[in-house]
Amino acid sequence: MRRAPLFALLLLAGLAHAGPTVPLGATVDGLLAYAREHNPELAAMRFEAGAAGERGESAGALPDPKFRTELRDLTRMGTQDATLAPSRVGSTRYLVMQDVPWFGKRDLKREIAELEAQGGEGKARATWSELATRIKAAHARLYYLTRNEALTREVLDLLVRLEKIGVERYAVGRASQPDVLRAHVEQTGLKSELLALEAERRALQTRLNLWLNRPANGELAPPQMLRPLPAPAKLEFTALEERLRAGNPQLFADSARLRAAEKNRELVAKNRYPDFTFGVSPIQYRNAVREWELMVEVNIPLQQGSRRAQEREAEAMVSAAESRRQANANQLLADLAEQLAGLEASRQTQQLNQQSLLPQADINLRAVLAAYENGRADFATLLEAERQIRQARQSQLKAEFEAQLRLAEIERLLGDDL
Image 1 (spheres, rainbow, N blue to C red):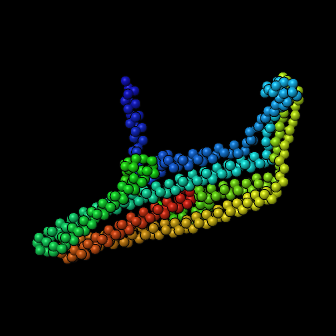
Image 2 (cartoon, one colour; image 1 turned 45 degrees about the vertical axis):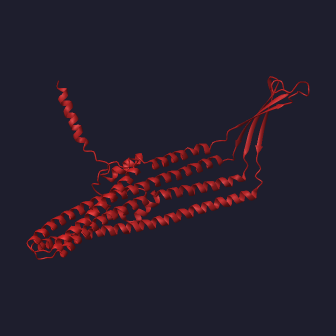
Image 3 (cartoon, rainbow, N blue to C red; image 1 turned 180 degrees about the vertical axis):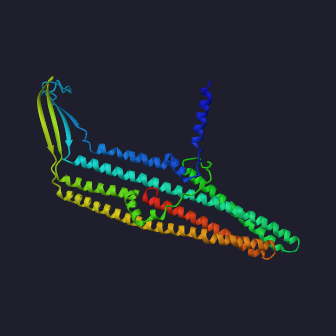
């Protein structure tokens, strides 16, 4: 009888340690984890990479052996009618043959296939990197739209309050009717902005759901926070250059293609040497095997002109792969420098807004609002102060959003999170 309370206490303790479940959409990490498991495009690339990985074993295997049967002297020198029975013809020759390439060719073919499979793996990594970047950008955009929507509603509530003050002042002759009308017009404009923000938010949620392989109208929790920006020490170009060269999916695939081209050059060079075919042949007379033959076949590489052309082609493909890798590396490094500069500019904009623009605009609005309530400021001045505080807060939201976009692009270039 004493075990039931103890079990209940253990169950409650387990639930307490489990903690609340974060709803999908609240954080970008939850969206990325869900997409990694459910996105069909990423799954297709994984299957293709897995299929390519199976080619190495078959590429390095020996060709299938060949079997041949020869029925000789079907009429036994005219002493019987033609027959196909091996025991009744003059003799039956059985031949088993196996093609064997020159030494090292099979290993090179297997290595080429494995390197090509690595190129497929690089494509799969690039697909995930692109998808993750889109999801990070969409989450940051949703955060921006949600906060902008809340800001617009706050300003709308302020204008409703100002309209009431204007009506009260108009009733006692301390304000003009245009002040009340202007407040109403401003409210109408803000309501239109709210409709546009809501439409964009819903469209973005639909796109995000489709990336996650969810129903288009599936519910997503509003974003709770943005990812924190890395410390400036982690954004040094030299250190990030090394990470880019080591982890970028495109450069990874380019390196695999270059190594595959080098291996193919070695394989083409080995075509100067012959391949072999070995065979063994038992010969049947009547019902018994009475003779054995061995056979060796060698192809003669006489067409040296075509082989030299193949070698020059293979050499050119190596040079092309190396040049392409260098060109892509240069472009990626240029993109990295651009994104780092943009991230630093967004960071400085945020600091400027927080330390100067927002406090000044807030103080100005409070002062003008108090002056308007006491009849010492006109309505146009109040509207201008309201626009300034709104623009300052929107500028802050935009700087945060742009910083997240820059961060997502940097991580796409690196092939990993910072």
